[in-house]
Image (tube, rainbow, N blue to C red; front, side, top):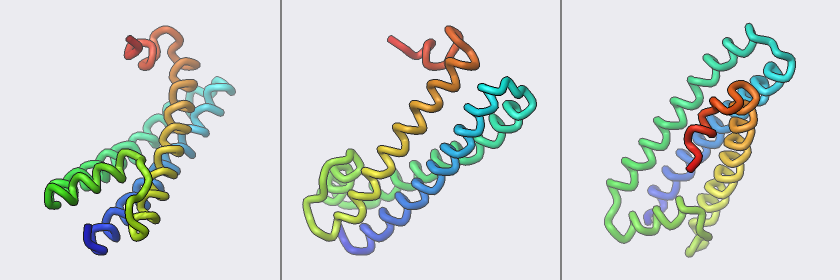
Length: 132
């Protein structure tokens, strides 16, 4: 991959990280509202959380578009990095590190969201419906 490709990927991953942090912050507030049984805050926070989640989807789409612009070999390298595998070249290390940080943050967000969903919906939780 070219330095420009890596630079663009790193920038997209940094934006992704920013939106993950934003979603995590709102979800943390949502968890606190659930524990207080504050229904007014719940409604506000649920609607506030929609924006960063939609922006995360948008950034993911940009990343997919970027991958489609690359040669087959570069697209494979790109996919390798995005899957969380270690960098194969020194210039890929900052991107690989950012992707790893994003994966960890996404896991934290997912776990917190799961707990909030169960607290709000019990057996009617989205996660309960999606379990095999």
